[in-house]
Image (tube, rainbow, N blue to C red; front, top):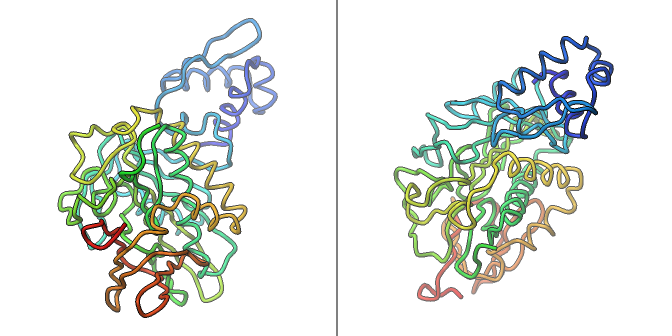
Length: 358
């Protein structure tokens, strides 16, 4: 989106504004202002010319300008009606030197999840990737995944969903609630989230999406999955070059279209305006991005994993015990019969009472 369009949306979001005032603020002619306003109308905005100036009377449910209208943080939104993968597109923008860009797709056509599994990302979900360039060492990268999980959880709660977080990056709805690491030396993109990262855009029963084609997670684990997050990065030994943080969220998806073990915001609390959902998520993420010390406490407060008996499948074997804490930068502490073990990455199961859990 151009700087002029963004400035126009910001001005209109503040309330009635006259044509001459808009021309002065944007540095364009009044005729150009009229053309920009007409363009917004063509995109679905209701804009009326009242006695005290232009007034926005209606905003589209979704789309790039709709998300940027009233957005309280300084991110550019690149919106696509159809995209193969928002994550791939964000990496392309990173290679071009971009930063603080949100790539959003109404639907995705070539999405891949963990272990290269296919899943669908139809219209109705929020399929997006956020490109940022934090001035931090690579070891801090997992904190950004945790921050996004908190942001998604909070946006879902605001929408009336009893959401919580399963370590480290899955937003879920547990049965108890109801509605109301990166390679520091390389330069390739690497996953930095811990368990069950879903490729940006979708969340299956096992990965975190709406339309997974081959879920292998038992549905009866005491929760329904709402969102999963994949974070990728490029960096050197002492600094991050870029991070792409990709939540895929089942928002306004019909429960009948969801695989077993998954849920959506609409299924739990009714349909919501996706533009507002994305705005709240971005604003909360940006708040945590500016205060990384607040990430772990916020994550703990929303965690469903802590206090549960878990089984974590890691590259070095299975760890089973009680999840008791999370440590910087996202390490899960599990109390086992052999003592406390620290898990940096793995697939985490919440065990039901029949499996020895609570």
